[in-house]
Image (cartoon, rainbow, N blue to C red; front, side, top):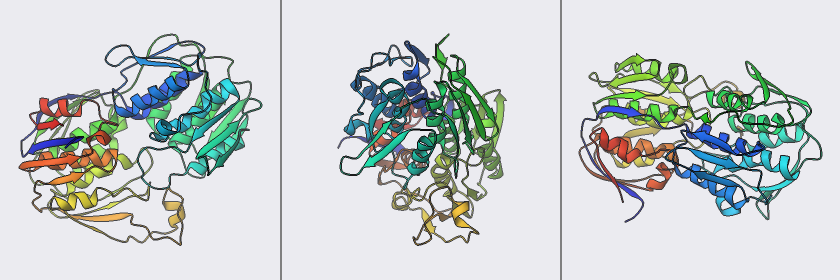
Length: 441
């Protein structure tokens, strides 16, 4: 057996966790660094599989991309020689799509494969493509080769309004517009804090980017020059994972590194369960079990709402609640791959239909009225879970299954551990320091 976690669960986990750098920021900053006219230094970069994939992609393009110590990365895109992204590695990670920006700036033409990453449904790539086209990029997809071919004759300009906010799309258009002679306006832009941190990174190096609520205004500059190393913020998704782990194992865990505003929705819902949520510092929170959990319904939403990446963790927490709870997914149409796996451990979860007015507006994916969707589950809490063998199908579901197995007595096997390692740095080591019995084989 390979690529698995062996877990002996049922231990009350206690202690402190220092969060790693945010995956969803580090990947974007690494790619944005390719826009600079010299080497760029990035600190607090998590050593996770997705980061390794992106660094390897940059090296295949002829650039320099490497860790120089535990969490510091040096990037140099000035020496890139290739304009076609490797199909095998590019299709593994969704962020490869953002390589359009540095490659178009350097070569004026490039080829990028259909992006990969977790298959959470038909993600709206069309909105990103439309945005690129609206700003002046010529782009078309070849279904035979699996590549998008793009070209850019002159600096991007104009404006684009997303029909629905796109995290990746907003960031890509920002990168495309950061360098040039023209002005670009992006409307109905996504509000995630990682986007604001990307803007901060670019502005720190000479870019001229301003946010006005959901609009982002960009005046292109001739070049970007880093003045000092940039530090990646802590991972708010990891914060929620360890908060959930504390309550699920009837434990007491203090999480270091995350700002309250980035997880405010989670904190509100966690308090409603009756759990202990204590702010101990500007970026330090204690999460502790406080007796039977009250069931709490959630509905995922764009930031600052309840983040879709949090809902798999919330689902396993609700299996321990005293009653039934409803979980309604608005962001993606295939976000419940973990349900069948939790059922193997004894969870009572059923799909339910929720009536929604104007579903095409309510859901953030491209809703097709001719299709049948499973967007909500009812979780019956209070059922004793048991150990077992489960398989990770996507990154965040992996953390959910690990939490479930750590919470119940006996030996469990979690297959597909490398999926978890796509987004969590030193997960096994961190859990061991909290008293968990877990090992990777």
